[in-house]
Image (cartoon, rainbow over all chains, first blue to last red; front, top):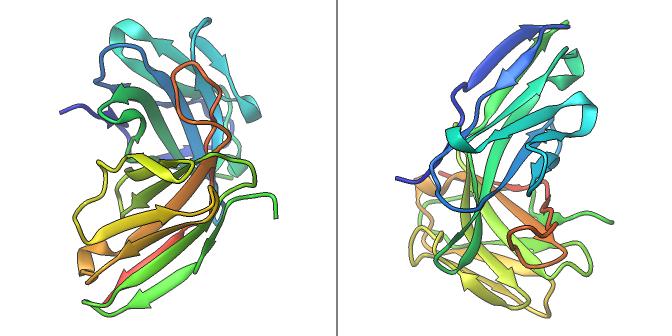
Length: 115
Length: 118
């Protein structure tokens, strides 16, 4: 079945550690890719997005993601995490399907950063 | 306010009752989306509106679920004869334009309505 997979459901890191959250999707054709973040008690908000061009995308708060088309992946990275990065992170893929364009979300990864 | 608002924030109901969830999108946003987030699950797409019409209803889980949008603004998601498996957070989002590849249609999310069916 077509899907968006986030491999890690829970990640625990110490401050200053490097972060990489995996995201793979199984849709062929052209897609747009997103990472959303939900901080505790807050709304979902967009972290970064890829439409076309440079496959290395910079987002807010020092996050970046790399689109590797051959691997159907869009992994999220940050060189040095902070306690304030504790949140849930969702990968999303926008694709063309029956009825038009649809955004499909992964199950999310809960990141806890220890101070 | 400038953001997407949803009401109620929490709803507890008994199995078999009907519930209505409301979403007020950002003013001027033509597209509106409903998602469901169950415990440990990602966001499950339910339906989206472009103006008052719903081009894609494929995500609605059953015929107990329906949604409407009036005046190109407020939307209501109705769940009839609620079941315990309907318990979830229902999220609404809006975007300036219709979803399309290569267009900047960032979805802005509301705070959600937490529905608990006893």
